[in-house]
Picture 1 (cartoon, rainbow, N blue to C red):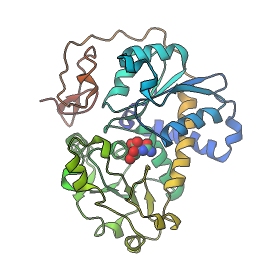
Picture 2 (cartoon, rainbow, N blue to C red):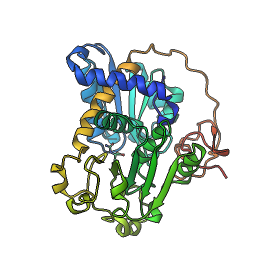
Picture 3 (cartoon, rainbow, N blue to C red):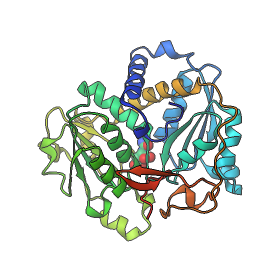
Length: 353
Ligand code: NCD
């Protein structure tokens, strides 16, 4: 693995080896304090973040490496109109690994084409968030002993929730997973995810009610309604507060069900749920830091690629998704990939018409 852009690009074996390393780190973190000594990570955060940015920073610090970057693009040349290509070319002169979060779908993929060092997608708009998935899988595996055969409820904004998309892609690598996709119709998973699940013959059902399915679940993954992704504020108003997990609703759940959440929480889990032993979301964030340590160790020690392959220069976007990175960065090549036999954008996965 050279970059981590989409969890779907990892094989199950690659994940298992990362997980094995994560477990070693969790069990004996003191043995890793010099694992990335002298290595430098650049964190480019074009979008607000608390957990992910802090978690990547502390992960690198605990490996003995250092971190630079920005958490506010207005303090960098991005505000002068610098392209993703130029920014990543520049920072890959200084860093051994680049971690980036942006509001544009496909942006980490775009950066990876030009970077001399590995790129990690720390969230590209409403598209993907593979390192959150590392946190999620680590949590499930540590606390449930394994992932195969689980019945997983994904609840909330499944349209804009990038953590959900990455988790579904990851769970396709396991056997016997059943999904209950719980969302209002207007916030259901994007078409490319539905096509992906069918292509991988995954069992899933889409429902609007949480309470009816709760007793069947091994994992309930709650998500925030992603306010910042709504073009129409009325659509947000209609959907906010639509699912709230309370202590009373939890009474009907299995005694060993895990309640997970990528955080931040708004109002979708009441505070009194936090003391229930099934609520593992704060622990999940801690596992995320260890999983990122395993990832950074793997990537930051790789040799620099002095001469990345030349990339075709595009002239106009072929993708019509208004949030796709190709809409603003016109030099990007016209990448196409097949999802379930359909031609899709190689950056954001949207179907090309
Ligand atoms: C998530 C994100 O940014 O996508 N948070 C995180 O990384 N832990 C979820 C969210 O913002 O709702």
